[in-house]
Image (cartoon, rainbow, N blue to C red; front, side, top):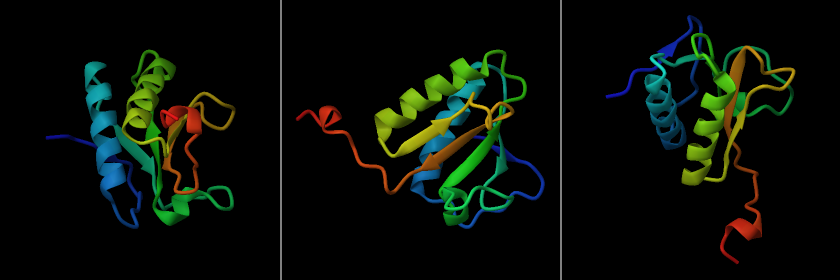
Length: 117
C-alpha cells in the first residue's frame, strides 16, 4: 500500500500508469525519511504556457520535512529515469525551491548513447 496526500484544491484530469509508478517511487523514498508525500498541484493552478500540468502529465510535490530535499529528489530522479527516460524531475532551481516538479514528457527523445547503441 502507498499513501500520498493532496493539498486541498488539487485537481487531477486523470491518473495514468506513469504517475501511479512515479507515486510509488516518491512514496518509498519519502518513507525512508519519515515523511508522507503531498501533491501540491496537478492540473490546477497557474503554470507556464505549454506546461504538462494542463495535460495531466505534471505534478508538484511538497518538500517540507525533508532534511535534504535535493538529495531525496536526486534519488527519485535516478530511480524514475531508470524506469522510463521520459520522467523529468526539477528541484532546486529558482522556480522550484519550495516544491519539486515532476512530469512525464511525451516529447522527450531518448539520447542514443543511453539506448545501448
